[in-house]
Amino acid sequence: MAAVLVAAVVAGCSFERSLPTHDQVFNEGAGFDGILHVDGDCVWVQDANVEVDKEAFNVLWPAGYRARGQPVEIIDANGQVLARDGDAVSFGVGDMKQGVVAGCPVRRVLLATEIVEVNGQPPQSPTPFVDRPIVH
Image (cartoon, rainbow, N blue to C red; front, side, top):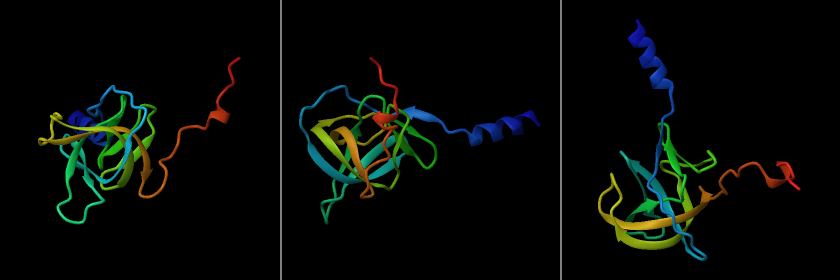
């Protein structure tokens, strides 16, 4: 009986895991439009701007980005849900390079700066600055 209860509690939990991140700061970057995919431990994007032979890229996310739940949601350092598996995402890219990302096939890697659109809309923003206490 206790095992059934534990299994039910675990099944209802939403486990978080860290995504592979980078710690680089970029003053400028390029835009990238892609489809977000999750394959096991690998969160990757497929180029949405190419009609034939769409290239897949692994992603290194900004510090604090995590994956949660099933279907997988991408959340930022503030706990804000930004995107989900299968979403069309637009984000800034500070750099692109060859590299290895744990749990992913070997392919080019995008160093993301921020997600700016999800399915053609801005991601939900955290509490606006005006609602925060003013510190003097």
